[in-house]
Length: 115
Image (cartoon, rainbow, N blue to C red; front, side, top):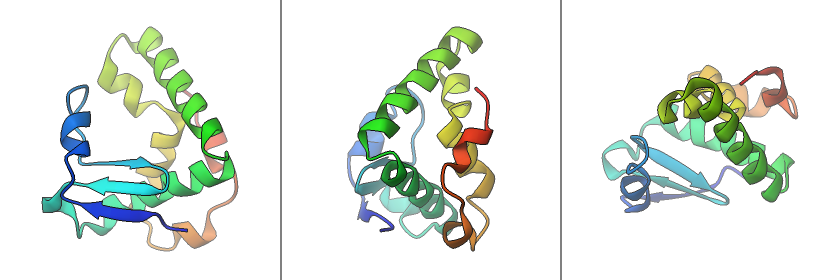
């Protein structure tokens, strides 16, 4: 599953109250700002999150994501830096421009990253 893409939704705008968000994945949906609805790199980034959600049965992804963000917030004392250091985000950013990554991705690939 690559996720159900919903374009032009208010959710990315609402999420931007904390940090600037172009898209957000809330399994199984990918909410994308309409101006970026056809951005392949952005969609691939979010589809990597769908894979992460799937391998952690949704709830595991959410728990680890929040724990990583809190640990990053304590360590970096900055919400944006904490977000960038979430292990799931590091993997998605590294491979968002790699077209074959979704089919070649190894399970639990995000575990190699450090907060």
